[in-house]
Image 1: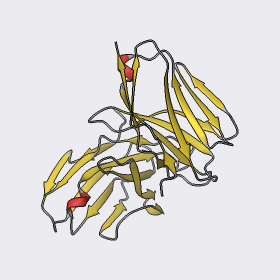
Image 2 (image 1 turned 120 degrees about the vertical axis):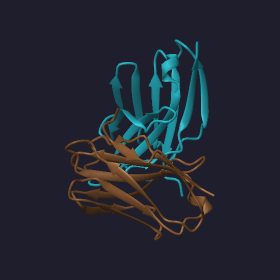
Image 3 (image 1 turned 90 degrees about the vertical axis):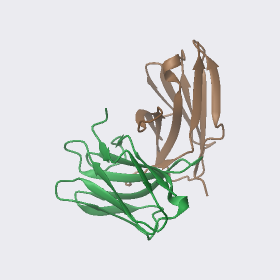
Length: 112
Length: 114
């Protein structure tokens, strides 16, 4: 039973355009969400997070949107750059716990 | 560089064998997490230790065990290995073990069971 789903295994975008990565969750107890980025041969690195008390969090080119009623979040990257090409993992957790539940990841390819 | 180190980088072994993966957390971090990433799978949480004590358990098989030592490094022991145990094993650390603190991941150990 996958509690965090990233239904798009891959996404291709042109440099300068917007990249939108989507994530759905089923566990209504999740109240904190994170995005991690992973390059080949490296471990995942934290990118941005959002608490369920917010519906948007922005950090430079990266914005995460949370729709609690739809149990859906998305990561927007604007403008996309070739260096953004990586696998992006969505993760979720429940306050009071420190373990993260990850999705399977979406591979983003940004072409020049 | 996240500050989390994992050894070895690669490990090739045979079915039925036992291996030990090692993780050194970032300086000052008390919490260590182990994850498994199999082909086409996301990161599956295995187990968490906080300051030497087991704090949370995920989808960890009985053939697998872990511990965290007084110097805070951690080891993941995998025994009676099966072909399906071939995967990337990541260790992560955080300072208080609370979910609001981001976890810092090591580069992973790639285990191949032949």
